[in-house]
Structures are given as C-alpha cells and as structure tokens.
Length: 450
Image (cartoon, rainbow, N blue to C red; front, side, top):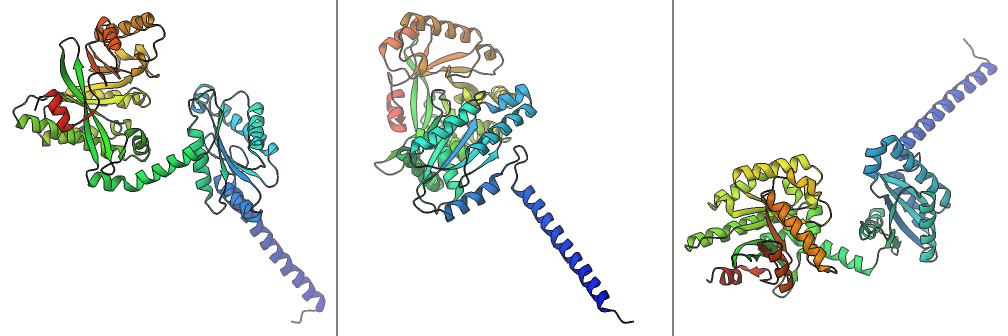
C-alpha cells in the first residue's frame, strides 16, 4: 500500500503534534514538580530551598560593589497566638506578613518563610538606615504582632546562605526577651562570641577526655547554727594553665548541642568521688548539690544513670542534691514533675535553683515536688526600698517553709543582706560573703579543716 504525499504530510503533522504534546506535558509536569519543591504552601511564596537558590544566584550575578544584607525575623510568642486563636488565624498572620514582604522587595531581592514563624529576607542597601527603614515598614504593616529582627551585612559573597542566616540569627537572639529593642546587627562582639563557640565545640570532647573540666565547690552556710552545711558543685574549664573558660561562655553552647548531658554526669561523678574520699578519710561528708539541665530530666535513663554513679561509689542518695533551674521546670511539666517525684522517692534531695527569676507562679509551688528552693540573687541586689524588700523576702520564706520546703538564699555578698535574711528567718545562705567557689583542696581546708 502506497502513501500519498498528502498522507505523509498528515502523518508528519500528527507525529509532530504528539511530540509537542509530550514535550508540553513534560514541561507542565516539571513546573508542577518545581512548584511543589519550591513553594511554601502556607504563604504561597518561596520556601527555604528556593530562597537558597535565589540568594546564591543573586549574589553571583551582581557586582561586588552591590551591598546585600541577610535579615531574619520571627513573631514573638507565636505559639501562644496559635494556642489561643488557632492555627488558621496563625496562618493568616503568616500570609499577611509574606504579602507585605512581596510588596516591599525589588527585583534584586528575595524572601521566604523558612520555618514556623521564621522569615528570611535578602535586601540590597547603601547604608544601614535603608535596612532599618524596611524593617520599620514591615512592623507598621503588621502592628498587631511583635517582631524581632536580626541583620547580617554580607561582606563575603562566597559563604553559604546558611552561614549568613546563622549570623543574622545570632544577632536576633541577642535581643530576645528585650521588649525595648526590635532589631540588632551582627557585630564584632557577636563575631567573637561565634568564634569562641566554634572553638568550644571543636575542643569540648578532648577537654572532657583530658580532664580540663574541673569541679569547684561553693559552701553553703547555716546562719542560725553558724556552721557550714553543704556545697554546690560548679564547673570550670581549665583550658590552659593560665586560661580559664567560664560557665557563662560554654554552658549555653553545651545546652544547645546537648553536650551538657556529658558534663552534668561528669560533675556528678566528681561529686561522688569527693564524698567517697571523705568517707575513706573517716569524715562525715556534707551534701553536695549538682546542677542538671532540663535536657537531662527529659532523658528516659536519667534516674538510672544517677543511681548507677552513686552506687558505683557507694554514696547515700541523701548526700546528693539534684538542682534544676526555675526556668527549666516549665514546659513538659508533667515529665519533669514525675522525674522529680521519683528522685525524691528514691531518696535524693531535689532543689529548684534561681527561684524568682521570672517564671514561677507561687501557686504552682504546692504542686512541684521539691525539697529545697534557692532564692535568686535578684531578691537581694539593688534594693531601693529595703523595708518593702524585707516584707517580700520574709513572706516568701515563710510561705515556702510552711510548704515543708527548705530555703537557700544565693548570691549573698554583704553583711546587710545577712541581717535581712536573719530577720526573714532564712537559715541557709550561699555566696561570696562566706566563700567564692573553691578548688577541692581549698574547700576541704575551709570546711573540714583538713
């Protein structure tokens, strides 16, 4: 059978149509895949993956003279908004913010909601005021919520987008819980902090293995009986013979990367070693309190790990006081309360540190399983009205004691504070008035006279 020229033409057009349809379908499918991969479906705009690509491309194609800044921000107490008004309302707020950003940016800028209530923006600018003006416009257009911003001015365009974002995030974290400030720039001070954190993370494992972490003990003193009655174990990082890294620098890093669990258990072991050493010398040891992070309390094997360490050194549980900060007691309260109660049932002393630093409801004290409450140093400093302070402290001490809980006042440095605490019937104090934290040998010499 022969096919005419007309037939060939028809077949050719038919095949061409099929090919065009296949290519069109493939392109359409590709666009659909890209949309799914690159779109944040809460806002309808770019997600983090698309933002990374766009930022990389924008920084590559623009001149080195073009100045860019990474700006990140989030909504203060966004979880509370979701809890009170529902996720639908929360998502509407996120969409409104994204619409505002879309109207404000130009063709050489981009933005994305990268997670939860966290947004990233790549902005062009000539001077810092340009960035601040954009931030003010964002806040004005979303005045029903409070926003916190961190800004990193990009100097090196060869770094990763994640690095820019992390540095802007560090700037933002420096103003968290400061209601008077809405934004912060990454600066030399934060850069030094970042370098120190990097150094800490690189060397922490070796430092633990080589014994650079050293336990110090700060005595507790009973001002009613005029004698020492215990101590708190504190950690110092003896980085070199002359250089010490203090807890304020490394503890936040360890809490963030969970290395804190190893440090806490290490200090517990050092405390048990010291108590065992005293027993072996024929001395009756005083209790030692050891600080634990909420990260520890949330671990299923937390209690068994503590018991194992104490049993290894044959330490009576009542000589170990388990301390957790006030702020750590809230959030996952059921788990934390159960762990505390189980520790008490076994025979450990459970203490809340930093009471009064801003989280506790006095009403909650009746529910928290505690043996000891340590009053935060904030109760005893900058007293403009001593009489009112005396009334507050006396009332709190009385209330806590009536609940069957012992009270320790920490951060005590002056004789006037001691007199105030005597009048308030607070028996146990801790602070530089009696002693700073001491190395083991100095502590033993002061407290046990050995």
